[in-house]
Length: 306
Image (cartoon, rainbow, N blue to C red; front, top):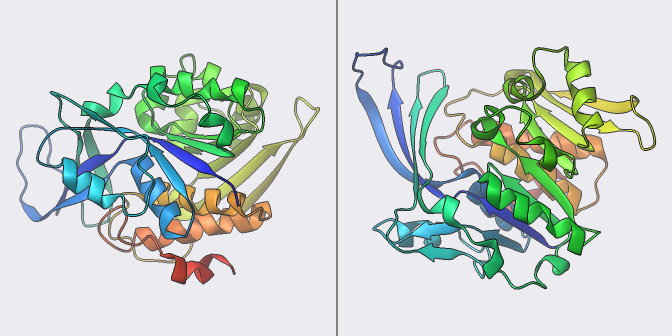
């Protein structure tokens, strides 16, 4: 086991279930409306905490009606380094989910992008074994990646999400070169390296410095790829198929996948078992509405031990 911190967004998710997504200038009825805690990084932190890990969350909230709601939703996550920002709202996401469980999202970042890394005690990073960044604000991410210079043993996992990959490879390349574990889906992979064959795309990212890559492939499954040390082209890979479940809401499935993977790394599992843990948690979450509803607790941890 190791000590882990998670940085990124904590949001209120406004989840609207609809029969179908509205076209431009059209209207559709919302059949169910829920206000749930979310934010990719917050979801990962809560997921790891539920499994018994000591997790520190590095993020910011604003001062408004949802602040207490968000802080309470973090459950047993350590909030020693959370920051409350004056005169700004916390992050919010409008999530539209159709009958097939597919979604579209509209994000208001709010206080999330005003986190100040320089307010964290200098010795904190030296205590960490893992740092996970999920869809971070790029200027903040750059400061956190610099922690590797102060703590050589620190392993950084990075889930840029489509919000960042849509910016293309150039602004992310300095971060990828320092990334130990990268999470992407196929669309995000294409954003970064263009329309290449999967094998070529992964090798391209390995050449740019990403050491281990997990590709989330939706209903097909997931792939693990690792660069072979000391070579420019050789790599090892593992593919596992998805589990046959009925998807109700895909919100948070990628976050749940990251929870399973990071949990496995913290326990020193073999890569195939780590990949299976990610797929298992992703499958659990999509069967219920909400990003955290299906995340297991410590007493359910045996689901990952198979």
